[in-house]
Length: 244
Image 1: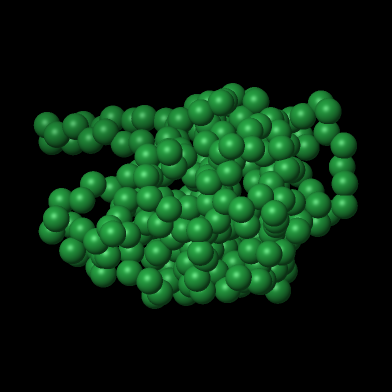
Image 2 (image 1 turned 60 degrees about the horizontal axis):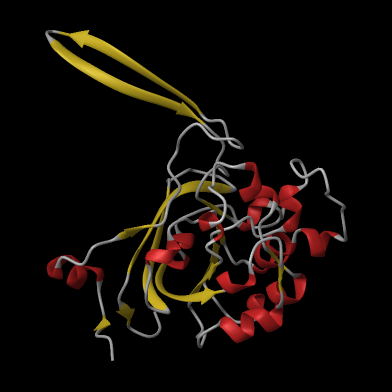
């Protein structure tokens, strides 16, 4: 049985490597951040400075309930408690591209989910199409409303995805797009966030996690008031202690 881990300090003392689960911020087909570099000479010392402009919902990021719910909670200190801790990996990579992820598929793939878990849905879609390609965004699997309703009732802390999880995300880019009901096109945005469950979008590199449970961290910027934030997401491939 894998050794149970009780604290991040223990991991650091053991030299356990962190697995980076974040997309690089770079010129990108969808997000197109502005990245500038300047250099200033002062008293014989050169200062190199990077400036960038991008949205709070670009690349790997977290959505707070306020993103879609005018009465929802904005991103704040309380969300930190929901964005780190024990996580369960639900591997649906066998479903392939451009397929719905049903409740039955999630139940079949999910290890035991306990209250307080962060649930990470792993499709490994980036192995088929790079995250910088149009196909990554228009040929991804997507979550069905029934699957999201099941997650929303499981008393979980947060949900993360390594693919564009709502079919509605592809609408501006997919010439074959045909809209459906809002809960069918946007189940994660509507059903998770309206239930106070943050969603972590566009994780990467989940194939490096070998266990079905791990210790997961997502660190947002400290905005005074925001509907979301870019994050640095990482995990330790160790068996976490159950509960929080």
